[in-house]
Figure (tube, helix red, strand yellow):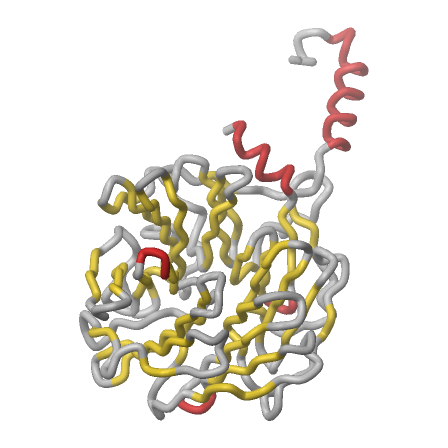
Length: 360
């Protein structure tokens, strides 16, 4: 309705506009985390259960879909560790990964709802640095770290993380010495044991997407149209199955230039990479697929974007009128419907926000 055309109806139009604005539901519900630590790990397993992790040995847990977040016990000698990744099995059991050089990279496990933790694995490489930890929905999991002597270090478990072994004697051969994996959101690694493959994205001078056969440990590198540079590349990868095909969406950019959107998203469709026609609004550290709404969500420090056409076009997911103007930003990692970020920030994305994205 154009109120300027019908002067006599302006009062009625104003009322309708106000009523419509008031009925808009918030897209992001900011949670009370009770911490100011930077958070980079989040794993939502459904049924209202999610686990989060971050700096200063911080681990959080919710069993009521984010209404309250429990502050977990700090694992032994971990109060200064940076927990960049967490993977949960149920409301009582989870494995958390710290990132750091050498022995600062560790894995701890809890089986009693985070009241106690057991150290289960410490990085055996003095110059190693762990970047991501992922399980395939069962007891099988992979752990990947930066290069040591020209190979990315990979470790595997088949008993829920209780024991770990080298996936390959040397690891996975890197493209060049500067190539690295970014431990920004614990989503640079993707495990698909059903198809005997795992995937990861890299940056740091050699931006690439690697598909690795679990039986042969042979990497097949392709090069998505993502940013290239010492602090740039691919930061996160997610997938969805479309019939007999698998579609991948990768996001990244340059974390030192978060407002620059060049090379921030690409998608693997029809067996080749495509740069996005409409890019996200800047560097994005995490991407996730929402199957119920058939929407991709990408998040980063300066905003959140959504795509309903497999990453070809991205649109900013802005806060509604009832939210704070910065409700869409300061995010590091995603595990829908939750996002985590700086200074203890946790948000829950409403299902209504995703359903409205279909109107684009």
